Amino acid sequence: MIKFISRLVMLVCFLEVLPASFPLYAADVYTFHDEEGARYYTNTPGLGCTKVRFPLVMKKNGSSVQAHFTNLKMRDYEPLIVQASTKYSVDPDIVRAVIKVESNFNNHAVSPKGAQGLMQLMPQTARELGVVDPFEPESNIHGGVLYLSRLLDTLNGDLALSLAAYNAGLERVIARKEIPAISETRNYVKQVMSQYSKLKGY
Image 1 (cartoon, rainbow, N blue to C red):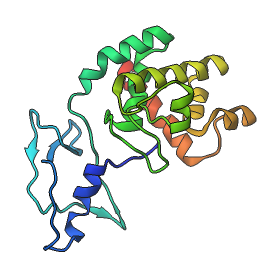
Image 2 (image 1 turned 45 degrees about the horizontal axis):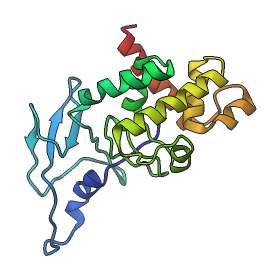
Image 3 (image 1 turned 120 degrees about the vertical axis):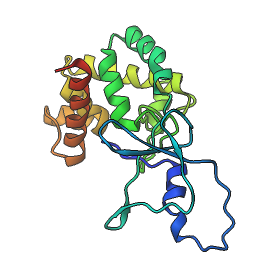
């Protein structure tokens, strides 16, 4: 799975290391818990959200700070998902699963490797797909679904291999004719398939 931390959350996470005299002006931050008890942070207020008061202290695991960022308006993307899925003949549930794992429905997500937007398109891939603004939800979703559709066609509809190619690149999958022995890619495929199964009610 391509991990990401939004600029806002990155700022929040490191507030505690800034000097007290450091001038800082940031947008409001809200926190909420999902049904499984996991905590999320967002800059969008909504039902069940609590405004975060600074300084914010977060749990750390070694040297890394763990945080999640989500967009409470994920349902706003539903018409775009259905539209793109219908246009490119891709199961909308797999698109939902990919977006969940890739960006957790944060259209401003940027991965450490530079992947951008809801479906985490790399800049070069976005250009090849005709996506001018990867952070614009409609363009990103249409580009991501088109790319996924092409992978499925190339790999004879094999979903697991197509997801592996989406994460690691088509060349690596074709060269091995299997999911590459890359822990990130295998974990990514596992997580997307798990989300897909949940959406299908398996």
